[in-house]
Length: 156
Image (tube, rainbow, N blue to C red):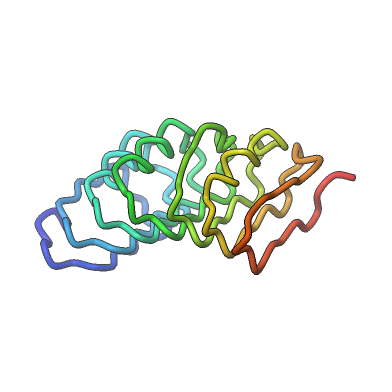
């Protein structure tokens, strides 16, 4: 889908693709879930080429880093839904996504209590999922719009 200028939703879930080149300026939803062969750079380039992106699922893409999240945050100012669950290289520290409404970071080995400061930057967040984040020992949040939170299997 390199020249699909009217494309709004693209799912590449569980594909074996190693490269992706997007020129989809109207894309609103992008799903890379379980695309294990896509590199961090490929995901970064694809997502940042979609400035209107509102929903991004890159769960179970083990190569994704905080640097990619920062670049996506800068390029995709309308991002409101992010699923980065099962991404072991993400700490979410210093990542600022103010338009997020729904954030899923379950089973992210790098998420700690220090990560919560960046999460609180998302002031309009309504749903937060932090299940199985083994390094997360305490959660202190100032999120006035939060309606749903899931903290299953956290350390005591």
